[in-house]
Length: 579
Picture (cartoon, helix red, strand yellow):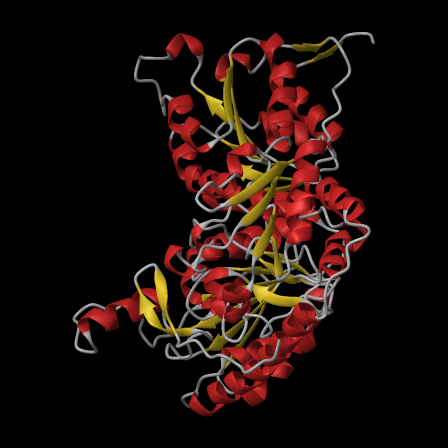
């Protein structure tokens, strides 16, 4: 190849983004407009944000939905520190993210220059790799290495700092851009065979599907493995969307979000096969402890850094899809007994009955002027096409959607949730990135609490300008409901502090100012019409906000009340069964 010379570093970056197939770039550039000058000539969508944190959230949502790197461009100094919360979330969510920032010019380092910061030291704890480019010939290789690290192994964020002295210096690329597709390593044959033998010996297995299985369930290979094993299927919150929740062996989200009668399966099982899950605290909450006999776990992980060694069992490293295919082949002669699959189906039916009872109970208890969250979810299910992606937060009322079957994802549905870091406002912002990740026309719904949405509202003009049509369903309980419920637990109703209050949100005026749809619902009877009309806005290309008044007392199923980081659990309910 004849060497190619670019007039400046951002021209090289823009060409590399074209090579990556980047569909959107998010950010808030510094005073140097060179990034936008180069992107002006590209077909790539650019979302100019009001806040760097939201820009990284959007890029993270894009990465999780698309399965390829999200790209965020920012300035220097406080721009980087503003972005760090988003970078923390990208690392925790294992999202491939490329963050490119300005950096103080080399001859001004250590002089107290404008917005000078040791940015590499600040960002390194949050990323897989960080590099500063001071010489133009270093840029092409740095870009390629950054992307290789972002997408391979356990995916995650990487950081490149472009020193200001590069601004008008040409950059020469001496060879073609390298292939940037993630490599999918095959598992070690001996480890695969050893774990297959352990799986074959189990009589009451459960299959736990984590975020590492996202985009790896081609041809429904995971459901086929579950059928061969007769295994009950659970997923972690971040693993939702990887498997079809209308499958007869699927029983919900594990750990914190498992309710009776499904919680009994974890006490009855004799093996967990964890596919792409780090077995984090929320995923294993409520599992049998040492005094009950800890469940052995066979872990299948892409990167060894995601392994948990706190439970008995075994592990195999490699691509989730290739591991599943390998197990399926090795277990070709395996025949599951009928007792355990029948038990799993019995539990699934019990979950449906319990959900119907719980929704009816919530309807009866809803105060005047509020709508039960279970009703919001069922109405939303009817209003929006089945291939929608639900992007969630992790607040008190919106957690209803984590509990199966109050919200169910069919084979065509998708889900994006915050990691165990749960930064407030992630879902509201990430929905923009999810929408731009495509495919074109796929519905995206953000289900968020009013506290999270208010933190995000400064980006409404960005949403309008980006033409990223998202349906925002905002559950309004008057503020930070989770914090208020914790405060009530320790201080009672007479506290002089408050995290919630009955007041107008002001969202209607903001939505109108930016040409977005808006509706407010305070009666269940008006909900269907409001959501249907809002969906018509979105289908026509305009984002729309539906605010729904909900009661602070409308706690999700399984919760007896808040108790710090985690809720108090309702008493376990066992259903009689045979076998």
